[in-house]
Length: 154
Image (cartoon, rainbow, N blue to C red; front, side, top):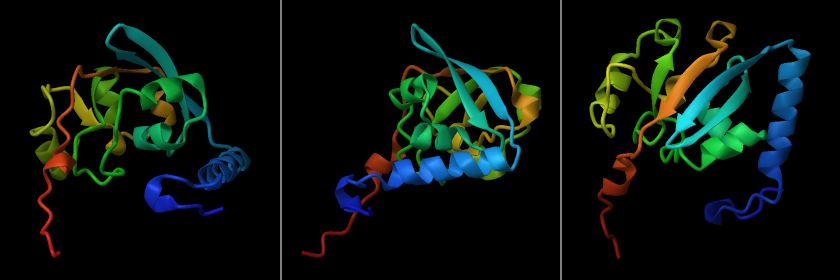
């Protein structure tokens, strides 16, 4: 099942992990949290179990909204706050989201057109209080992962 992970072939391992995660969430009685997303001229709804980050939705989401979101957010750093490619604006519900930590603020300073309502999707974790959240995807992204210098050891 592991496939050739280094070239993006998982032979179904991600699908299996997503199915197990969904079953665990359902058995634990976790609620689905819904939010709406505007990206350019497109608008769509995204659903995720509480405790799931927006990055998790991009990586493992299975509904139409998650698939749409995947085409707008790259999440290049795999959710470790190192790239800002999951940058979103919280249009409605900012007070319910909470304040970003200092490290997130530092990364948001480097994001594409940051605003006072900017957040990193990898740090935005769905809770029942966030049901009805409204997000907007910026019209561009600064992928800081593209500028990591690698030493040639050849």
